[in-house]
Each structure stands twice: as C-alpha cells, then as structure tokens.
Image (cartoon, rainbow, N blue to C red; front, side):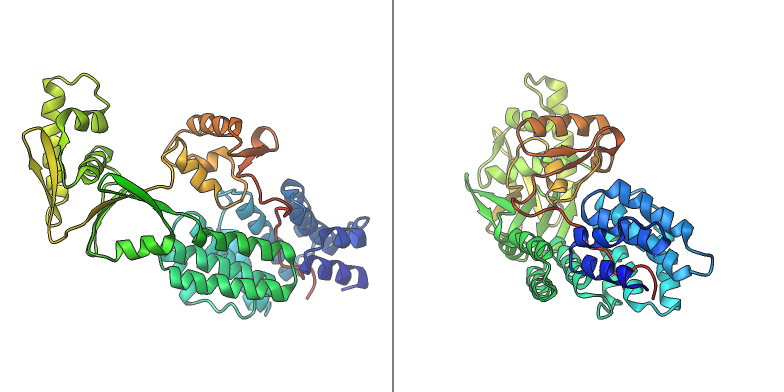
Length: 404
C-alpha cells in the first residue's frame, strides 16, 4: 500500500473524508477508487459512493478476492444507511466468508456486525440475538465496535431490557471517545437520549402521564393488566395476547380499559370500534359478536361484563388496569417512529402495512409541519427527521478497505 493510500485510509479511519479525498482525488486505480467511494459515503453522497465502489470491485484483479470482498462489504453498509432493504444479503454473507477464510478478521467481524444491524432494522430480533450471542466484537476497529454496541443497545431497547441497553450505550460512548471521532460520539449521545425521553403515556383512572422506557419495563413486569397500544397487545403477569391483526377487538379492549372500573356506553363502543355515528340494529348485533370474540381472546386474564348501559372490563387477579399509549396519538405516528432513528428512508421502505401512495401523502403532510425533511429527487428521494443541529450525518466504513 503506497503512502497516499495509507494516508487516505488513516484519514477515513479518523472520520476526516475531506483530507482523505485530497490524497486520492486524481487517482483512478482500484484502491483509490475504493477509498474515494468510502469518502463520498462519509460525505453523504451515497449514490456516487456505490458507483465508485462497484468500479473498484470490477477493477480489482481475479486474484484480489479480499479487496473485492471489502468493496462488497462497504456497499452493503451504504445499502443499510440508505435503507435499501432490497439489497441482497447473500453477497454480504459470501464476502464475510471470504474475508474470514483469508484471515481478515476485522472486516469479517464487520460483515457479521452488518448482518446483525440488518436484522435489527427489519425487526427480526430473535435472529439478531442469536448472532450477537455467537459474535466476538474484539477484532472490530474502535469506530465499528462503538457502532456494534449501538446495535446491541437497539436490540435491548426493543426487548425492554433497559439495564443491558444502558450498559451497551456506556461501552459505545467510551469507545467512541477513545476513537476521537466527534460525529460518532454525537451519534452515541443521540441514541442515549432515548432513555431520557418519554417513550409512552400511561392512561388510567381518567388521567395520564408520560413514562420513560425503564418505567415501561417496570410496568410490564408488574401485576397490572396492561392494554399496550404501542404494540397492540394485552399483557398480564407474563401473558401476552396479541391483537395486532384484530383492530376491532383491540379498539374495544382499549375503550373498556380506559373506562375501568366504570363501563363504556354502547354508542361510545360503536363509535370507537366501527366509527358508527348513527347505530342501527346491525351495528348493535355486530358489537355483541365482537364482544364475544374479545371475551374469548382474553379468557384467563379478564372478562367483559354487560351493564345496563354498555360493557365493563372485569380483570382477574389484579387491582390495576392501565393503557399504555404512544407519546402522541397524532396522525402518522408510525411513520415518525421509523424516521426517529435519524437515517434516510425511501417512501417504499416506509410503506409497512400501507400503500406507498398513502405513505407519500403522510410524508408531504408531515413536511408541511416541519416534522420531516426530504433530500434528493425522484427515485433517489429520501426522507428523514430533522438532524441534530451542528452535527452532520455520517457513515463510518472500514478504513483499510484496499490492500492487506
């Protein structure tokens, strides 16, 4: 590796893409193309970065398998950051195997870390946890090790294991500060703010208050009967009943839980469950059917008693009933939740359970209220939450990509 390539790689490892670019801007040999691609990625020019990395992969000779595998690895990370969830995972697995076989333990470990990060992003927590259990992050460079701990914290937060999440964030902060990369330190601080930010609202006895994540964890491990409007489940003493695919039943469960220990009049239940403003006999008959289905779904945890005016929840073995709701019930909360990670998403990637056109309308409405911002045009357009002031969006990739 010549002196200019070495200097550029060191600059990228230190989070200084402009200095790296000065060393290799006029060079078109494969190692320079690869490092230019990484520099462009760190500067946020992800499309240009992928083009340069693909050129570098084609330019490396057939015997330079390690260099080509590193290009694939860098392109995979760009795909994750740009939320290109359609990028095939097989090339990443093959690259990781090649790097492991050739003795490049640092980049082989980075490939495994990216696989864990991808599984976290698409919500496959069980698979992500299995990979974490068998993964040794020691070969990772400091920047990647901090990013890995952020991923571990993300899994722990989604599992509501706040003590483990806090420990992972502490490790990430220490590693980021030791690496001396200010943008990475800011990313860790931004992630840590999740633990200090209200994560849900507790609704009970006609009042409500905000809860932090650790308070949510304590609530769900208590003996309270919880109707969780964040995940559309009902929880009680370790039993979790999912109503995610049964919106009518969940609407009824939430209504009677919010009114407990009182009842909910039948007209109010019809409005909550069916949106019926003027109920007729068919609506009332359907309500009786759905109440029967809800009784069956909650069997063993609570009953639904008929009263003179409507229906009331009758929980078993508990003296506390609460509703756990998102911090805000404003429209398009699911879209804002996905954008809360600070990364750039395409409208197609955000279309989870809804049409892309519906998501696009939601994004434009949120943009008029300064809740989101758009970058790029046409198919290259990406959406993101407003960034933290004074800190640029960064991408940290393996620095010693070309050569040994």
